[in-house]
Image (cartoon, rainbow, N blue to C red; front, side):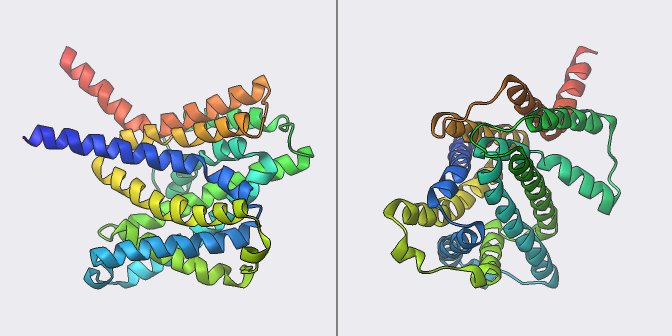
Length: 307
């Protein structure tokens, strides 16, 4: 009976993670279709996302049952600001470097987290980490070697890649701040981060877009908040609670793969061979970092079973 419950839990977690990654993979497309500036788009993403997350928090009684500590507020503030600025840079990178390339470069974030943790918490950087870092940065160099054809100039393309790297660094900061929020509901944390985003980006909000934009643009703006923020967070955190970390890490690669497919088949972006090799190297490097602990454990178990 327990085994059957575990299997059902795993199946549900896999479905939730797959749906979350499909939603993530279409963020870039939704941003581009909205036709809006990054700052204005982030405001409405936070606004509509907070409505969904706030309803879930209210329904589950999270507002009343949570004891708010100083650590909660400080970590939520730091993580929230890093998350919003991360979105700003990433959304800008979509237009400057293409959706697929920006998303792939953005997936260097595990390395950013490793280096920040080494700097702040003196965590050791092993030879294995340095090897996978080298693999990814060779990939980054190959991607940067020539611009994709839909981008006007090489300078703009490089700016887009740097924006994606900056976004990855800020996302790592947001992830590290979440380490201090163990025991708090992830959905509640996300709600307060969205509320913070509303306050930060309110000066840039353009409410007139609902009278001047077309149906496609308005739909994209609302979808980004309701689906790509509210629903995606619920699915993602639900999956993380049900699945082992290595399954979450491996399925996360669906996000950039889908973004690349959208680039190719929707925007007709053609990459040269060196850029394709670069993308594969970044995927390989990120996989090496994300899955290294599980690979080491597996090899040790195999070694023990043979002896």
